[in-house]
Image (cartoon, rainbow, N blue to C red; front, side, top):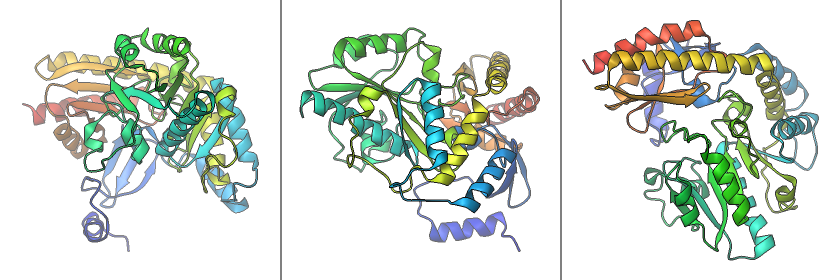
Length: 402
């Protein structure tokens, strides 16, 4: 007999560490855009496992891929090649224009690898004194020691000092601040094309091209963390493609595995060649099961019709949010922003109570940066589902803030 939500929570409180604050909900299964909890309640998910479940829940192609690959082989030593791994590497490098791929198990691991590669490249060319990396205030790059050091949020660092040295944080969208931060010790600039955890902040259209120019002039590597924005989320295969630039290193995760743990670092050939044998590795990264799933995910997402739906539905979703913001007025709604299907409604009041109220109405969203409602639904979301969300969202906001 299945456990109830209350029973699951009681066991969790006894046996799980308390490092994550969870809602009083235990999910049992999902299908498409919907999830169900242990008490039978149904939810339409506009968070998508935090931009991870790009094809929704239990998509037929992924279920089939997992079953078929698991029946062949799940894991092999990375001393050997596998067909899913090399095919996925070829697809990612060809679609991004970068030369080589490294596979790991998460976004934090991908960013860790990117930090190591940036420093290794600079060390090989310039010696040990050029290791500094400039990142962005409000950024989020992961939970390892290197990635919390890179992250521009103090709350993730408290209690873990001393941090890894060599990171400088500057305001997002400010090219002059970047220029002033560059020193003789700087080797790279690392940033998200859109700040995700930082509140879905989209830069001015000329910002990333200016950053790329700065990197070229100063001989710096441009490292883009596309863990959240990569693989269709913003309406392009990669967010940097909106700006006509080519970074030196790109990191991916989330949509890459659709919920199966995997991550990737892509790099141009000149830089990738410095990740020499023995300089970096991971035991399970690149395992055939994850690679087969990643290949199916990316092949589906990169289809023209699929990307077209992201752009069309994303535009419609944004317009509906803007209409809602106008109805709420400036006393409650501050702004609407985002790209593609990574969108945000910023309130003038804390957003978490709205998320909790919205759950009661059968919809899942996310609170970030204190006052921001973040929406990163599965990329299969339809306009009809957006229409279902809007009255519930308005009711939730007006219930919490009458």
